[in-house]
Image (cartoon, rainbow, N blue to C red; front, side, top):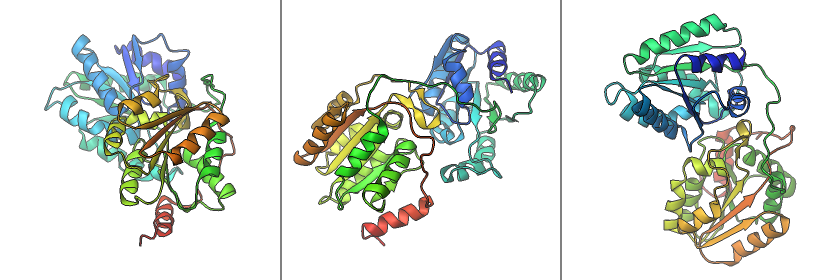
Length: 377
């Protein structure tokens, strides 16, 4: 399907604001919005998480009486359920909106393990939320899209929401746009340096996406295994809270959390909790490239936010920033020497190797290996 035609049809149907969180299934759609199509809508906003998208859509309707379009990966429905049910639903405020949802983990299609369950329940979840939907793929015609949007607007008249579920390959494939940020240090180089600094007794938690994949490779190459690493392959934004409780339960050991700026932004309130708890043994590292790289590299909605300063204001007593190998080395050395929770922001480039490995074990196997390594049956 021609993505430009798809987006133009959405706009011509009466929608003037679009908001969402990037998704790999929707990469061509997201790239077009951010580049060639950036002037089509009055507003295109990438907020902190999918719940924030719902808030923007509510504000649009309250301001104009017109629905907004909200795009997301189907995993993002989890973040959207509360505001959809407690704000948008017709039994509450009755706020119409159009959802564009990338269908990861579609039954019968090979995908990564963290998408399998959500892929299986996506249709049932939409039905439970009382959101009518249509499914599109590469064979969907322009005339069929007109009929789908006509159906959507008939639903909007009853102050309800409508979803368009997008199958993989709907908008074709391609290299997409290449985003840059001006930083000089590669993320993989930073991860390699951190891996060499890790000690055998350390406990490691890594966030979802390419950070975990790079750490997985580096740990096997440098440490000989990855047994001490919990790879948070799903649940974007929650690695920090996992690490916090591991630190609380293992006060004699250093717990190191490798986070990403997009993940940190998604649930930034967790930084205030960590800053209030202040475990002496937690080192929280944010690899900041200003993008949602694992789903295509589109910039986050908060490019340039000084996460080191956010951490300081949230109560982290030891805060460092690194932009090259030397400053990272200094920050890592200081992190082990100081008392109290540590935050390190590392400014890195966008980009990764095309042959970057994925974990060889299942999530459940990673959990078992990690727990056994830490003496937990």
